[in-house]
Length: 309
Image (cartoon, rainbow, N blue to C red; front, side, top):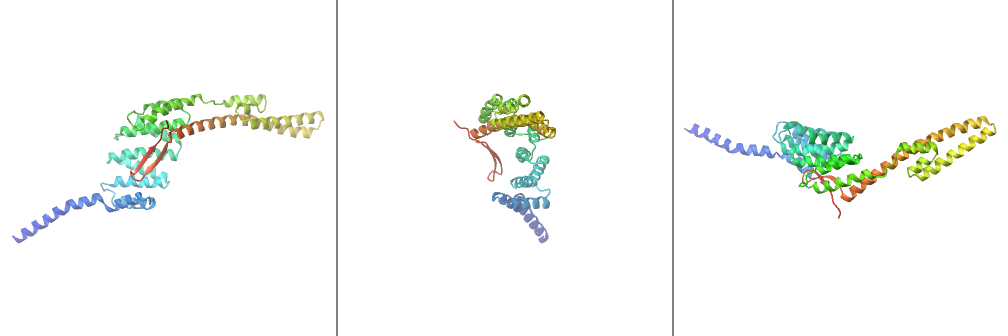
């Protein structure tokens, strides 16, 4: 009888302690410590502790959370390749849908910084048109993907496509108001007074300096016209005086300056267009005070903007 009581007592103690063990395992002080290091912006140690947890507990219920913490800490340290691998790992596990949505969005920003931008744009298009199999992309994540994709297209001068995607952002989303205004602003890019590089080259071929003047680079125009005129005059004078050595040298130099004048005109038109687009986009950013960052308190990325009235 005493033995039966002893066995029953042990069984009762085990049953009482078992839920506590499960709860303790779920809390896991090691991973919680890694989170606290991230909150304190000690990202190097956060990476170390997250890696330790993943190594020691590869099958733990919170291992996906550890991968996300590792990716975010690496991102903060500028270790973008490691961050990219971590976000992809979180997405591939598919056991924590709430974390997957965050990782899908944060991976996009990581790809933007890694470059080229075309890869990030293709990734955002994939989220919208062909999301990873078995993953339900939340509406909020889709709208943020539209917002970032539209900005990438805007920076590449794809005004119509950018405007269309900005307009696709749902009006009840926090980015909806900004998206509507940006959709209208993007169309203004079509009216920018861009210069045709071919036209600039032809004009400088006809009259050195004319292409630079067309590209609104008067200093380059004056230098190009003056140098070509000087060497051409020198070449003609050497020919009249039958100074063939000087004629040959000056002729070759004039041909070099003439070709350089055409190249400079074409390049000047490209520079003019780049600066015009750059200033146009800077103006939009300034008006919206667009920013992207990381919030340690929310443990995730955020978009911030201000619309001036």
